[in-house]
Image (cartoon, rainbow, N blue to C red; front, side, top):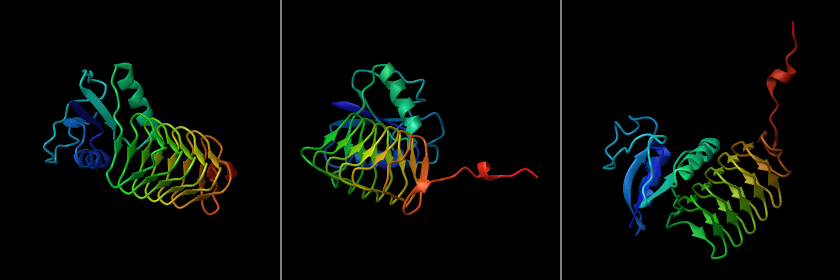
Length: 216
């Protein structure tokens, strides 16, 4: 029997704890890792704090889920745990729908009422939140954060460390570059350059206000 460690004891971590005990999971809950030693001070969850991320050394029966919402921080956490020989589990809530021909990689978290359709791929460490859909042939890259009620339509692609705000929609075949941010409610109808932020309907790149300032 594997022993599950949840990295991150904030709100998302508490959600992952709840989902990890639903049904008949293939593990026992071992505890949380968090760099804030008081992260659970006011909570009575019946699950111990095991210490900081940097201070923990994995043992053979450990498996991990990373409940950190920021893609870049999730990636660095994966790297630290992997460097010490740790392995990540994959969590699919019982109410989620995942097609037989969909592919889920290590450390993926599929939240309640999400959909991953036929021939879609969700890569390592990505999170698909409530009521979001990954349509046929779409790709969600490593460490992406897909917020609630998002629609990644057929053959759309998210690069690594992409963040989608709630209710964002990516149209068919569109590519969103690495580390891009798509604002809440945005509708992306054209490719998004790496590292940019797009907002609105249709989505356009957010301009840096400092570039429009004039000296007096």
